[in-house]
Length: 178
Ligand code: IMP
Ligand code: MG
Image: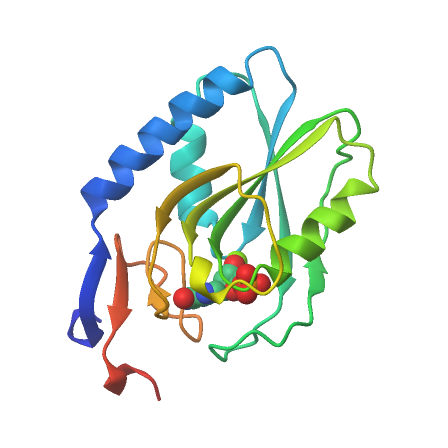
């Protein structure tokens, strides 16, 4: 797996430090609120798990699975819900936890969809932000790192379902794309 990597762009240490500070900020901002983390499967799993461990106020968690990409590296612009939430978000202070915001189409759709469900508030926390590729405006409340316009993998983020288990964020070599 390591032989497929061209460059590490966010190290494990940098991920740890950033997630610790995001957790502190979220703990402060949501004190006294009814925080519910909604992880967007599957890319956000590592981030969601480490982020939650760095939040020291009560919270609940749920997950949604959406697809907009298939196994290609380009957004189709079509978003489909493959798994909906198990629980109601009525009255909750929802924080959507996402791996990366690229075109913005996925989150734009998701926020719109969740808005009709009676939450007290809906905010977004994304580990990575690729602003150069944005096609629709998305207001990201908590951002880990901005990344260049390159396809990235690792720490939950895949290429063709692989590389999610890398403990850092990396760019693949050309040869890795088959
Ligand atoms: P968007 O709808 O274009 O903002 O893309 C959202 C989803 O596409 C992300 O949650 C990822 O799952 C996937 N995605 C976007 N950029 C990348 C990337 O560089 N590597 C892997 N997946 C990506
Ligand atoms: Mg995603």
